[in-house]
Length: 498
Image (cartoon, one colour):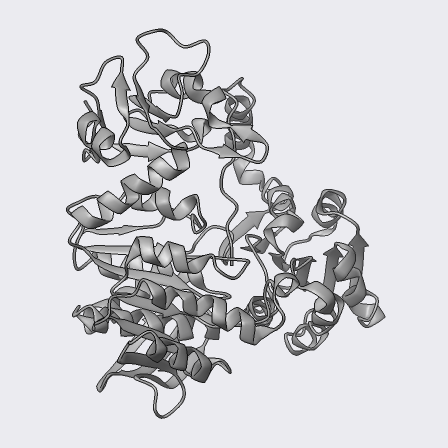
């Protein structure tokens, strides 16, 4: 038995799901997994279904990888008669959601729900970081923020947690409400409302209404934390009050903000901040650069205040905030002659996030003979305004004094064709085509930022640039040998949402 915390005994899981056990039934799960490729010894594997897969086909692989049992709705073919199964009377996703409800009810943690058009994952990870110094803290892994990810995250919630932080995403109306009712937060943060997912909404106001669904599950005595500088603040505050919430706290530069930014100095690798949090004046260093991180830090400190935590201690912890992969991670890549700086922003993109990260790029001075280079992939789900919103990036590119722009995707073509000729690098249809071109053209002293929506696959460009690191050659070869070994097939169940 692992020394990890037991999350589910066989008996408790059966009681939560209404299922029955077959095979050995004395197991205890220390984790919950929905992807057989990511099963760890001690996990309970949940055989969920998706548009192109059925997790029941991977139960054998999951058990072979160390899962103690599998949650199914029927015994899969080809398994031994004594395979450890929990057979639910409903679809496994519904059964896992029932486990999440029970886990939430059994946990006395103070819970925070985070949503917003941009900044959700960064804010969630910042909360994890600052609260971990004040008590046992559980937070959503990665961006598991949809109708699969939230129930999975709740099912993984340890009963002895002091704090829980959950990310809630959506790309259609009506999605956040059910998630919030499962999470039942004591504090709800809406980071900001911007032009994202416009393909599925009539306008930014409709996006605000969808984000406001987070209030449906918020404790009646809880606190709504809203961006007071955002154009949708009044709409969100009114929605909170319609839900019977009397505690609506704002953050920003507005003089009425409960967490008010007084001053900030933005530097290439950090920011120095002076703010007042509900009457408490604080000065702190934020280890992540950019005004967007400064604003997110205000919401974090306001949430800590709402939970009754130590705000000064939380502010000090911001000086050691680690980077999140794909969201601003920096790396120095060594070439045979010189080195360049890679900024990995490849996880996702929206117009607001693009502008914020380009501002950060503009703060970084290239090395001798180097250039500021932006490698941009399409921003997805922007509907009829897609080309116009891509073209609008020309101004932040100019303001950041970017020397060269490489781009991929049909919407980025609209921007690329309108850039000054001296700024244009290469445009291609896909990131697969662009990756080797960018890698071949990089030189020592360059500062290269790569950003695009997840569907643009700009992570491939990051991989191509990382592979140039002469200091990693032996390590990369070893990793390649491991990666190319046959492994159990599995489904990829999660698509993060905004």
